[in-house]
Image 1: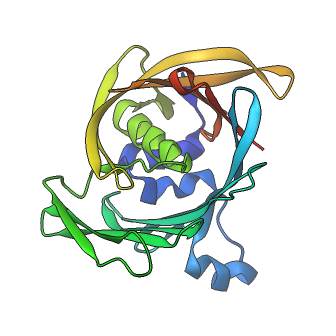
Image 2: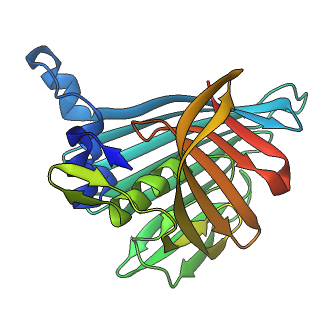
Length: 253
């Protein structure tokens, strides 16, 4: 697999914070806006179960002078008992966790915050407005990848990290080997659990996307509960995710 020169810096430095190559440099009139952060990706995912849309995730990824900020809002669709959640993941320039905050707005009100504590991670959370605050340490380094429930943009962040660690630059072209697995540690804050995950680039594949056959890059995650199939366009943005064990499909709107 070969990529354009605009992506080289992102992969060479192996950090989502340096994936500024995905976006064009800001113009002078946009300096003030660029100071707050440069947009790397933004959009929404439709979430389907058994062919029916059950939720929407709206997300954005920005890069700034101190690192990257990944924001996401999730809400259920076609459900009388609507659920609404949001999250903000802040990474430093090396791609390590600076802070992760999750909030549930409906049907209940709850929140959770994860921050580094020296070389490990610490989580504080409440399950309701009247619930006392709980605390749980994790013997996990700040380089651990956050993969929370309902926020599929976290999977895109991990795909970028995997490609950055796996791909190499040769004669001005970035190339990624196939069938080479890499291991990552992950944390699911909502479940208060950590687990290993392996990622593998499977090459290019034609799939049906919004009724039309298109060729995408394919990455597979293997987890303790089963595989995730992920397809990305040539800018490495996630276009489709399939979780066969849950009969779940995620499509970029």
